[in-house]
Length: 371
Image (cartoon, rainbow, N blue to C red):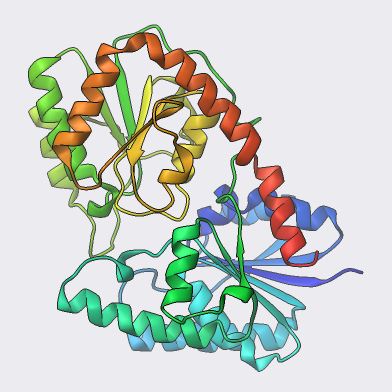
């Protein structure tokens, strides 16, 4: 039976990069899809149309707490739901989940599914502002998820956090292996024949651990000046955003090589030897999965989401978060143990194929949503 679905995200490109394969699978099953995110570019609409999905933009402020903008988001979603009368709504990331969950109450018969892709800024830190924000977001999540058929998590730590906070009962929770990775698009490639190169990718946020990466790079360059430590990623408007001039200063000091931003990371992954992600928290880091599929050893932090991707000594190593010295020491280990790279990279690829193949993850999501 053909169903009407709405998929709600925040960033238009995330519909392509993170949900594209899922949209294609849903379309192949004969269901009607409307994808929603913030103001689009024409290429996003064209790509979604090619996959059989309609596109609608809606007003959403991904970062910040402006009650007027959030009220406009909720109101627009209510109007859209009434117009389209979907059978199923699938929302991911914090604001689409919260306002989509609240708006779906206008359609009592519609099934609502929420994908929690990480705890994000609101649940981190000890300051009074963070604690108040955490309490507010907890109440909003609890209210928005009352109508959810299932709440889907990408790692067990996030699931347990929601259950312990009383946001959602454990019986309503489901667990999947991240967003998955297209292992055919991210092909296994040999390590490049060039000077030693480390790479990290992500939006320029403090809680991605990029300041610690820069500090570690300063230590590394003093001992191994021929080693390259690269950073790839765009600016971000979040309160946690790192100013671009700070990153450019790291580049000018010669500690890191800042590569700007890109829509396709494959070239950069192929041209590095070790992939690094010193993040403070993740749902399941997509760039790590892409690096694993490419056949690269992984150096990341022992935090929710990241720790699921690495077994120490097998396909890489875990280090404590926010610890530039420990990060530098493990980078030095990689520099001095080049003979281990190929074995670790091979294991990364095998784990990506076994656990994180996007087709397997999407099959899980389809089963959870009864599609």
